Each structure stands twice: as C-alpha cells, then as structure tokens.
Length: 251
Image: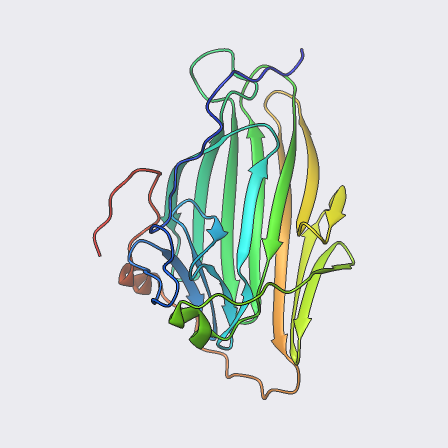
C-alpha cells in the first residue's frame, strides 16, 4: 500500500523562549537543560537546539549551536517531553499526516538525549503504527559558532564556523577546539554547506527505524577536566521539565 500524507499547515509553532535580543542575555526560564559537568545541552522544550543560548557546551565553549530534526515535506508536531535524570531527556513527536487513514497518528519520532563529559548522544527512532508502508526523508541540521560561553551570555552573535565532511558526518574546528558529529548508520547524504545529514527511512506497518547521532568535543592541549560524579535524578528538579508545544511553564 502506498504512503499517503494528509494536507496540513506546515508552519510549526515557536517552542522557544521568544526572539533573542542583541546585546541582552538570553532567557532560559523555559529551556530544557541536561548536564553532566563539564558538559551540558540547552534546547527548546520539543528537543530542538536552535537559537539564542541553545547548544551543546563543553568546557565553557559552545560545541553545537544548532541540532534540529525535520522530515522533508511533513510537519513534526511535538506531543511530550520528559527528563530521565539530570543528564537525559526524551522527546516525542508525531509526523502529521504521514501514513494516516484516520485522525489517529500513525508515525512518530522518539528523540532520546544523553550528555556525558565531552559527548552528546541522541537516538532517533521513527515508528510506524499505521497500516501503510511509509517513506520519509529525515533531515538533521547542525551548526556551530564555537563561541565561548561568555559571548553567548552577552547576547552578541558570533559568526558561524564552516563545516567539513568527516567519516559519517560533519566536523568543525577553531584554534584548539574541535567538534565532530557522526551519524550511525552512515547518512544517505551529507551537505557541509547546509550542515545537514539526510536519512531515507522506509517503514512497513508495525516496524521502526533507529539512528544515533554522536557529538564529540575537545580542547586540544587543555588539561582534562576532572570527571564529575554522575548526576542524580533529584537534580533534574532544578529546572522545568520539557513541555509540549503551547504548554505553559513558570520560572
């Protein structure tokens, strides 16, 4: 059976804290923060890392300023987010209209994040609970300015760093700071100019597809930062849990 995609509004609602203001420290009151010192990640409540203070940081430098997941021609609607400890978070979304025969969702995206010192791991799982075979191109977009955290806090934008193609992904470097993003399995296409990794996903009814993204960041020649004890789940209460689009949080 062929894939069907219902018509829909492709405009996704803003799940961030509002537009950044040049020269002012970005707000973090409704951000999702996962940490394992000396590394941490800041994202929107839907898991997207994109804009303002968002990013994956290591040793007071921003390793990634953007890490977003999109489906070509299909709107992704966030439905749930939750912490699983201070260093882990999960995000669920629906690929609206894809393989749907009724108002019930058929295809979902489950995004799982795990932060360890110098390393960000994201697992992407696309599951088809519908009765149709489906095909979709999943596009991961990444970018960075490799900015020091002081510049990010100041609210002043830094110039993006041009990516280069690495084995199975993208890499960036400036001075002694180097970052590498690798996809497993190998992406179907890598575009360093756009900063994208593309996967062609085909799913039979009742099946699922999984990929992993690994980001490694390191300062060459810097004395290793002592490994902090693993955060406990209780530390996750220091900030608001990820929330679905449109949900309100209090700071």
